[in-house]
Length: 115
Image (cartoon, rainbow, N blue to C red; front, side, top):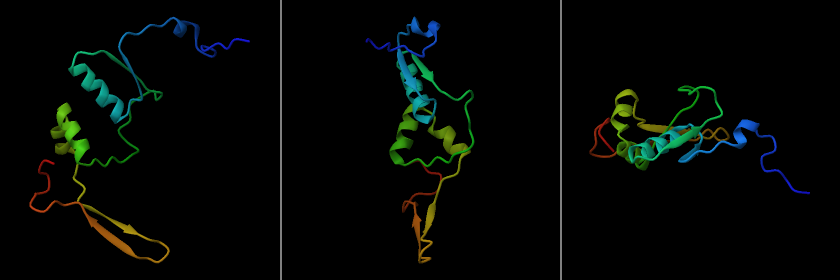
């Protein structure tokens, strides 16, 4: 018995042909990839299961390499202007109530200075 790889796929979608890059997921990674491909002249199609883009419901913490990538895409300065810089965190162990503070400040750099 042969299996049909298109079982459960709508009839119209079985004949769909797309020439370009298909990106699954419209989160920060998917949209960044689509932007980068667009800038070098490649077509892309972003598939997202959500019906709308959301700007709420999650926190995003970016480390140095992520900021470098966003700088390369040309969006880092806009993000820095509208979001605050995390200066540190505190971890607490509920079992023994010990805590530890962690600073993310870089000696010699002012808050808001580029990475």
